[in-house]
Image 1 (cartoon, rainbow, N blue to C red):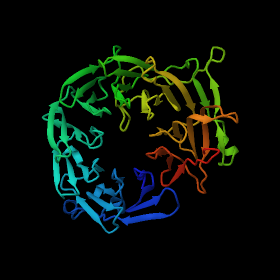
Image 2 (cartoon, rainbow, N blue to C red):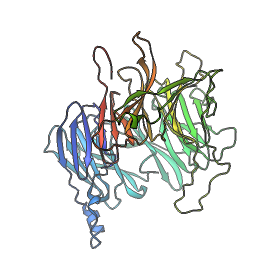
Image 3 (cartoon, helix red, strand yellow):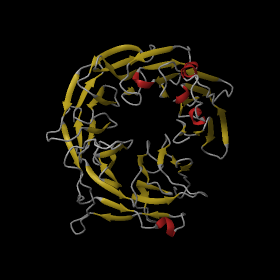
Image 4 (tube, rainbow, N blue to C red):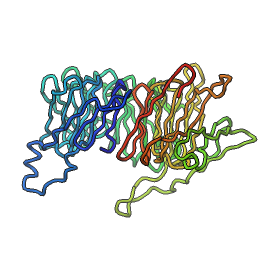
Length: 483
């Protein structure tokens, strides 16, 4: 099933779904470890609602989502169109559980941090249901703002924060998880049409922002105090596109539909730096370019370094940036996208917080890596590296944890290759170390177009995914070299 492939939290197993069947493989050897046939019969409510209608297609009974519990002991499989969630145990193959949605329907389900509760989101934003596997009871939370965003668990698993919509007002609910999701705070938000929320890594602050029509980000705490609001000094056509926190929680990173990223400090919630997308690269920036036609020249078996160039006064480097529209877009044609082809499309920090990976709509073939200074240095974020591919980048992911050597970025472009950048590789026989970008062909018997990459939790494995196939790649370390 498309996209349903996941490493277990410990990285020792790989979970995948094939139509109505779950398959678990070990990551360190070939072969299937466990498999289950999912009970995809519709819930009683779903069966009653569609009684007398045309027979649904078989694909309605396929798994739409699957996930590991945080402790790797259980697996859930969602069949959304049938309104059911099946749960299986890795320790006891015969143990199963089944959750059936009512008339509210089911869009998605995921695990709570305690690994014994499942959060189910209904259709039409009617409610969130928390099912406990331990007590076989359900807790209902009414009127979530969205079924796929606008919620978060605090890192310690103590609180569940949910954006809600009550009486035409945006609200934030804070629920105590160990107490059976008892409501502890419920307060109005300083937004008129909330787009989403981002909970800080420390769990003390929540960033909330308006929909795309207005550039406005507000910061509140879990008590309900409105701490600050940020809007750019210059006028912007559209609003916020991406918001993430620095791993330390000290900085809030805001990207819009323009060519800028704004960085706020949590000391006074003021703007401390702005990242501007410019055509001319700063002096000292490293640019890595993919070799032309290397896949065909090596018969899809190549393993080559990118071409390296460093921007200097004598060798200035310039990149091509498509010009964003000068006026706000309007919807005039059916199925036309209302959003312009501009702005930051993704942002992701390294585990240490010293590197920021970003991609921009105006530069689809480029990935940008910015250096974030450590606390002992002056806070001046700078562009460090640009990775230039020949095809538009479909995914760019930073490793969750430091890999065997340094931090690694993995990219894919929908071709039969994966691209790897590392900031601490051995460059020559003298032991000199530094950054390196390589293109690696994916050695498969059938044609493989890598459209997505996913890191293992320990940063030492990668899932490479095509539309209907996947493969896994791992770092191998011996006494002499690391591959």
